[in-house]
Length: 187
Image (tube, rainbow, N blue to C red; front, top):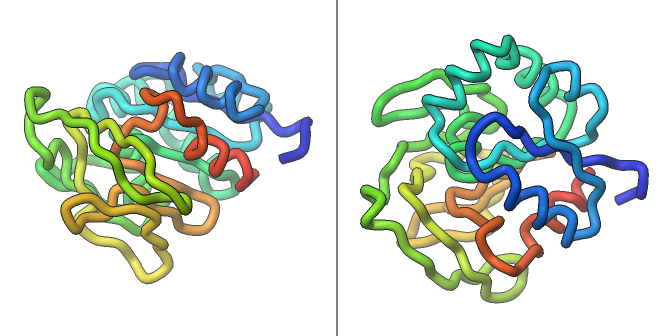
């Protein structure tokens, strides 16, 4: 990544602060994004975990939904957990609006309730890494252009398509910044 590239973190809801720290640890220039105008000053964006329905409401209230979708048509976006739900082509359980930026179908809260959250070790990015699942969605379908980078219980949990990436887990909640570094290298 060139030193002049900046990764934004959507800072409307969710643990955007942990993503900011992970990106800084990965060597990225980072900006918190709260307005549509701020999208113009970044080269890529992370949409953090949180609650996807709440994020949608805030994006619509702040008139950011369409600017965010337009940004994603030309720039890389990495969605984690709720962020993965937002950039999916389709969302089920229940059906909800999405940015339709990546050819995946995501089922919300598919691994269970908060009590069913877990930490597992998965092979990804050429080694084993820790993955933190909190009320995680499941990627139920991937389109032909989607590359699965890691799976858990025979379901994709880390994938990319072109410039975009999704993780149904929370890489920002570990001390390992390789997932963030991988995204930064896409810029």
